[in-house]
Length: 242
Length: 289
Image (cartoon, rainbow over all chains, first blue to last red):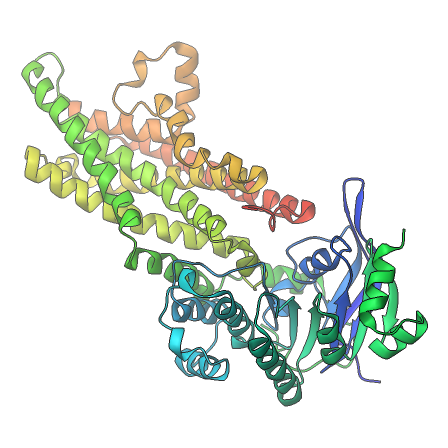
């Protein structure tokens, strides 16, 4: 079995008395897409925020590329990126200006070539000079993904990347992600409330509930274990359990 | 920086403390440049932002200019009043814009909900602060040029009458502005957008004890002790000494510089401490929500 690029051990996050994440451990292997599933408030976003170093864990450890995140933040984050429907780029800048700022922030070389390339691959040519606040939600999502892929990360955290997209664009985004994974060996942690998308995209799924991992495996394994017809039914069953 | 393009053989590799320190000490110019460019892009097509730099200083100058013209009638009773008031106003604006350069840059990131993008990148808090300081210097330069030119055109006032002392005076006021700016930013980061008003009001807490328009001796004794700890008060006292008696303000500049370096070190340390506290409490990703 290949060495994991992400290794999370006994991760805990408490905010006062509230336990957002309770002793979770998991790995992501090179080129793997791991789905992180769970109802609202299950701890998915807090987990991703800890993996991105913007929230400090209460206990446990996060290692990426064999390095401890707490001690190697700069080195690790250079190789990591994220995209979230709920995080936008500065609205007053154009699409291209935002991509240039990100490229400089990560110290990329040949910036214009890279920007042109990502704009082409995500079909953003028609709005590359548009001010970000004037983009449609689908265009904003593509900008978020362009920002994440521009830096050619080894690990990518995607928080509901296709939320608010029409089925056509969502399908294109999924194809793009699969192609990236195939060509670059990218590892992805993926959250979505679209169960069909989760089944389609994820090699493995972790199901979080009230901060704990309650199920782990392939979509088929999880469906079989809970004796349900599909992942959506498993989701509903687990989400309603007290 | 170490290459991590390939996954190391052992996932249990433990970095040394030395690695961590080396990483933390190095500031990367490209990241500071990225943030400065991000803020300069804002001014390309934003009239309100450009107005914010030029409108208020210009208005201040007009009002205080007329007051100064009025005071010219009493020049005999208040020696140096003409040169002093407009000079004090321009120098106070240096301090104010220097503080605003830092705090408004941080607020721009809150308003844009961009903090997550920045701090989930390799950007360090020290690089973030350095970029805001560069922005503050740009703002000070822009405002100073406008005020000096307008004061010359409208009131035939020449700020350079202060002589070469102007350079250390301005540098010290920029540093005092940074101190108030970093402190305000740390408080906004901790208490969120409801503390946003501090960006505009905090500096005025320091104005009475900066002795901008009056000498320190008019303050009550106990307030003089506090004012003595304020680097800006030494700059304005020094300026008055140069204008009134042509004395060399070495002692005041020494105090101002020493206090500035001490307080700047303290507020930068406080900012880093607050940053870690906000990461611990999850506040960094919740500001602006």
